[in-house]
Structures are given as C-alpha cells and as structure tokens.
Amino acid sequence: MTNFQTSAAGKIILFGEHAVVYGVPAIAIPISSLRAYATIRKTDKPLKIIAEDLRNQDIVLTVDTQNQDNPLTQMVNSVLDHFNLACPQIEITVKSDIPIASGLGSGAAVSAAVGKAIVHALGRAISTEDLNQLVFEVEKVHHGTPSGIDNTVVVYERPVYFVKDKEIRFLNIKSPFHIVVADTGKTALTHEAVGDVRRLYESDQNSVQSIFGNIERIVQDVITCMDTGDISQMGKLMNENHTYLQQLTVSSPELDSLVDAARQAGALGAKLSGGGRGGNMIALVDESSVSRVTSALKETGATRVFDSIVK
Ligand code: PMV
Image 1: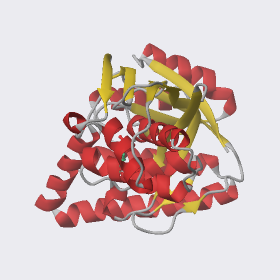
Image 2: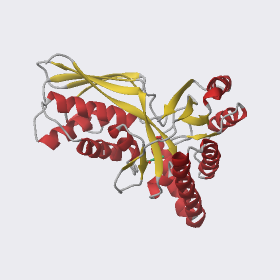
Image 3: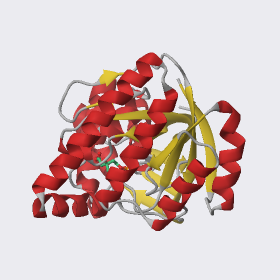
C-alpha cells in the first residue's frame, strides 16, 4: 500500500446552535475548502498516529490502553470494533486547516478523516451512516451532550436541516448566498458553553424555553427565505438569532464587536456561529460587500477571515 490520504470538511452552523441540543432545528453547511486530512503509510510497527498541528503541539499516539481517552485513538478503536478486526500496522499523519475549538467542526472532521483512513487500511468500506454514528460516539465522549449536528454535516458534507434524533434532511439551496466568516482568535470549549446554557435552562426554564421557541421560529422562517431567495430577510433573522444567543450568555465582547463591525460595513446580518464565547462569527453579505465587510472584520481584530458561497 502506498501512501493514501482521506479528508473531511469543516462546517459552519448558520442558525440554531445551542437550541439544537434541546430539539430545536438548526441549519449547518460544510466548508469544503477547510479540511482535516489523514494520510496512511504502511509500516511494520504497531499503529502510530502523528498529529502535529492539533492543539499546537506534536502528538504521537499509539493505539494502546494508555490512550483510551484520546479522540483519535478512540476513533481508531471504534472502527476496529465495528469490523471486529485487529489493528493494521500503519502510521497515520493527521493535518488540519480547521482551527481547533473555534466552532468550525475541527473535532468531528479529524475523527471522520481518521475513521476513513482506518477503514481504507483495513481494506473495507463503510456506509456514510455508519461512519456518522461512529464519529458521533467519539463526539459524545468529548462534548458531553452533542446534538449530532457537527458530525452529520461533516460526514455527509452537505447542507443540513438538522433536528436531534430525527431523520436527516438535506437542504437544496435554490438561491446561493455569500457569507464571510471571521475568527475572534480566542478558542473556547463548546462543552463549557453548552453546560452554562444547561444551568441557565435549569434555573429559569420558562425564559429559556421561550428563547428556544423564538430560535425555532427563526429557523423555520430562514427555510422560507432560502426557498424564496429573500436574502435580506435572512440577514434580519441572523441578527435576531444573535440576540437570542447573547441572552443564552454564549456570545463574548470579541464576537459582539465583530458582529457590529460586519453590520456597520454593510452586512445584511451577522451572528456568532457554533458554541460561542470565542471562535467564529458569520456575516451574510451581498457579493458587492464581501471585500468591505472582510476589511472591517480584519480592522476590528479578526485573526482569520474568509468568505464562502452557500450553494
Ligand atoms: O462544535 P461547535 O462549537 O460548532 O458547537 C456545536 C453546536 C452546539 O449547538 C453549541 C452544540 C451541539 O452539540 O449542537
């Protein structure tokens, strides 16, 4: 076997994060230009995983009992268990363009790429559905109560209308639109933000339920906007969704100032995306405003800005 490379895309949640954990629908898209890669090379030694650019440090792992709590080795072990096969003698090198802990699906994408690599090394094939389930199991260990949206959009690499524990609905975007994505440069742990929303929910169920109800209505309205191509209304809904995320306490001063900067530079709407508290925000823009919004976000301190056409 010569070297073989697999990959998986990053993702952006457009609407409905956090509420999705409680059964509210959410909309997410893959970002195919941002990817995690796993390259396999045959060796004559026990499996080794080299992940040099994750968590800013070199990680060299072997699949043994000492590494049971690492998501990479867990992914390998889940695939081996799935096929009931022994570990192949290979080296897997993991690389990723997706910043970690930034709401862009790095964890799920790395797991998916590693999963596909092991499947290939075993000479087997796996259905997308099964791979999705295996990545979800790994997400559960590391994120507590994930809704499953990250693994779903990353593994299927298609825009989704996602409702927890329900059949996946893929979206056909009839009128493509542009988004600009900007990174605060601050990492944040999704499970902490999810835990804080849980505590808020437990302390004041009525208020938080009403926020979730509003987010649900926003997501349904966005689907209508997508069908009719009403991008300017979608922008207003994006602004509204951001307000509810602020009320859920998952925004941050950095996210808020990027959101404000994007709006002032002419974005149709802007909001945080993903777990929040740091990580990335998104702005919905007309094609003609992409460069103005991009410059404004950089001037306001974004560490990385890119744009993407949602189609
Ligand atoms: O992984 P992130 O940071 O993109 O956030 C996931 C989205 C949440 O709704 C906050 C959590 C979840 O499991 O759906």
